[in-house]
Image (cartoon, rainbow, N blue to C red):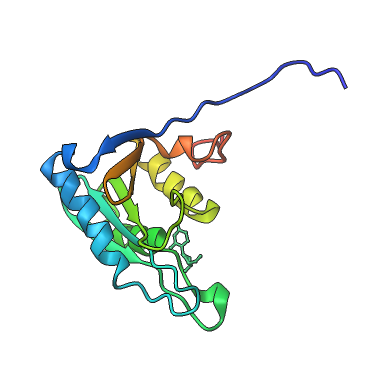
Length: 158
Ligand code: THU
C-alpha cells in the first residue's frame, strides 16, 4: 500500500552517573531504592520502589502492593502518585524516581502507570521527569509525553 506520510516521534533517555546528581535528586533516588525493600510483592517476588518529588521539595514514597486476587494489586508508581495527588492536589509533581533490585534489564513503567503520569503532567502544565535508578546510573526521561508517543492526554479534548 502506498502511504501518504509518516508521523514519527523521537524519545530520549539521558543517562547520568548517580553520584553526579544534585543532593536533592540523589535523595529522591535513594528514597525510591529504600521503598523497594518494603514492597508487598509476595506473588511476583518483583520489588519496585517509587518516590515522587513535589514542587515544595516534599517526597512521597510508594511501592508495589500485590493481592491474592492479582488484578487488585497496584504498581509502585501509581501507589506513590495517587497518594501524592490525593493528599496534595494543588502541588505540582516535579519528578518520579523508580527502582527495582529484581530487574534484569532497565525497569520502565507499565502502560497504565504511564497514562496516570501523563494525566498529572497535562493538568499541571509542567513536565514531570522520570528517573530510572540502577545501582550506579540514572536514566532520565524529561517528559511523560516521551513515554507515550501520540498520547491521549487530558489536554487533547476540545
Ligand atoms: N510493577 C511496578 O510496581 N512497577 C513497574 O514499573 C512494573 C511492574 C509491579 C507490578 C507487580 O506487583 C510486579 O511489579 C510484577 O509485575
